[in-house]
Length: 398
Image (cartoon, rainbow, N blue to C red):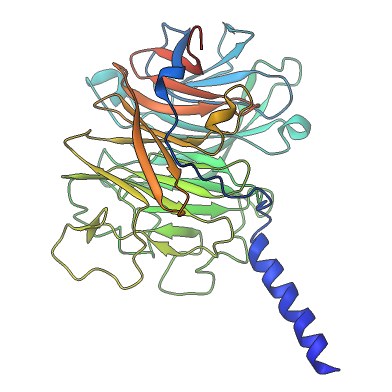
């Protein structure tokens, strides 16, 4: 009698591991024998005249609206191809003023995420640097009488993190399929991680955090976070060993996490975390830059190698994108797109029939690729820091 019971228990354990933290894994891995044909696609401009756009997302409320984040502090609503005025929210008076006073700054309004139950509770979250440069994660609410205007008086502090230097602030925030908020923070800045934050999980710098914004005074730490109860690491840390995870994304079909980490001297990288991960991955910075030794130290035994990397002959700063899951371009299903801020190259990455990662140049553009974005249907957008937003579409006549 014991053997069948043991088998049942083992089966439930295996099922639990395969599901992970509620991430859907019912989508099979899509493999390809050849890369997608770039001649069949084009970037179609949908809006211009923006001020340093850094992000685009949707509210998941069925409205079809797009929300465009400007580094200078405004969030705009785009509906049916028209940018509505006034902005949804304007934080230009409270963000760090470096963005206005210097030719280039990594500070400002950097990220936006809508609560999974936004249609019911009207909550959304922003990631910005305040006047002192401190990273702020704040909760806001939409106004009671206009769905296209947020209530600027509704701000509630969720999390703050001081920044020792002006660069490497991270910027991405996103809700995972588990309903928790993930936050990307850089290593604190300067060059080479002088404070060694990347290999110090007791700090929030150089990490991706995972927090529960529906519980606690400001937030709660999920009980299954990997370092809960570990006195050598911060409870909020989900992954570490990162230099500047500027953009990361979840595959909406599988729950897998793709983290683009901006490199230092030579190497840009894409890290991958399977949906059934228990967290705690160490991606190696500052001892490793990609798969290459950076500091000269002994690589950590628990370092997780990137799935993709490229050197600075191809670009200077990686911008992570998304796995395409839209319906308008079916041959692209399962392809992960990412780009480079400096060179304007867009790559298409996929698994071949031996389940090995491959990547190919998809487009050479003249765009400063500050971000990618998705609409509610999974269609893909590319943002140009120079003020434009493009959508990936079929080529004319294709």
